[in-house]
Length: 70
Image (cartoon, rainbow, N blue to C red; front, side, top):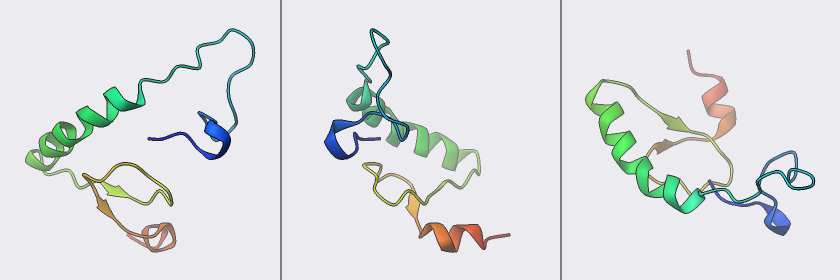
């Protein structure tokens, strides 16, 4: 939920040519706390294992630990 090194928008790099490169990240970030609240109310547990993230509304654990969960 944030741009990476050199302001790259995706893990695979920016889209070429005239494809949309303007990601509404700030708008999405504003909506995630409400999503987290709604999911929790439905009994859904979300675990964020992204190594470098702007999301702070979900529980965080290391990716290696998450891969060992049942």
